[in-house]
Length: 425
Image (tube, rainbow, N blue to C red; front, side, top):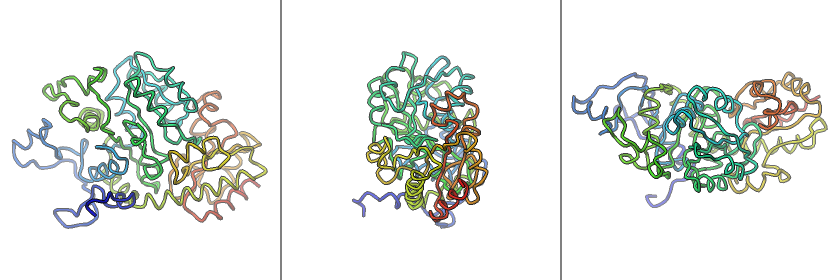
């Protein structure tokens, strides 16, 4: 066993965990505490100076969160991870470690609507500027790079469109330009795709979605791939230059392959404060133990629903890479061969009004703004998640007026289809 690499489901259950040393409890406890007693004055000084690792204050670290971080890092093939309050918080801390006022990053325009809003509007308060590229055309990323560019951001499987991104092609462009590639892997999860193995440098998740999987906890995570040289260009001073708040420490020089995760923790999380609650870490840990089982059922059900929709008279098109006729089917086979995910979009012949009618008529499916639940979920993005975008932006993001997004759950698939059938009338 010592020479055998554990399988995915084994890692999902055992990675990062051990019986509680104080009580022998097999399940990781909820360490519901704000602070931790130091062994002595020297121990406290070493912790604050980063000469030793350990717990100081739950805004920065917590034992329940530490197990979650170790587990996700193992599943993604990363060197370290940082759990935070939400997926948006993970994005904020990631860019905080890289960007200075006036800097740019290139992002695929096929993103979750909330990310588009965050990048277009909220990030302007920090003086950070997004330049949009087309995930369907990797060369557009190279064209968008300028001397001010500090990173490239994509989703492995796009939300809401379910498109599969050619990670390797964009990773080559990022590497040529000396830029880190950040991949939001929320829709795929490491069960379907591990972006680091395809050239990504940082992987993000909204743990709220499929990783937790039960719609009961908010969380996000940053996974450090440990495979980017933050000192090579001098363009990432927070990682490569002496840091005044830690007595001139150079984070990349000191911490090497875990430097990015450490920087996000002790500079971003410490000062901006979007900490994950220990209870949420506990609930997400519990969800991850069944990640492989759930994701396979999600994918199997979604493929069945996609096939049914593609033959329905009310439906003009279905966008799901699992369908052999889908233009992303080849990329699905390369990057996510076990399944194309649980999110799909389709167009209704009646347009906007038909979409509003459908979400009003479902009974089993829940009409809400989330994905990744055990329950099947439905939303009309143009009237909800993407409503703040212009019509042109909605269409480019895959959220046009006729689009309906489904996040297919793990119920009996015949019941899911029956509910859609009665709602479409």
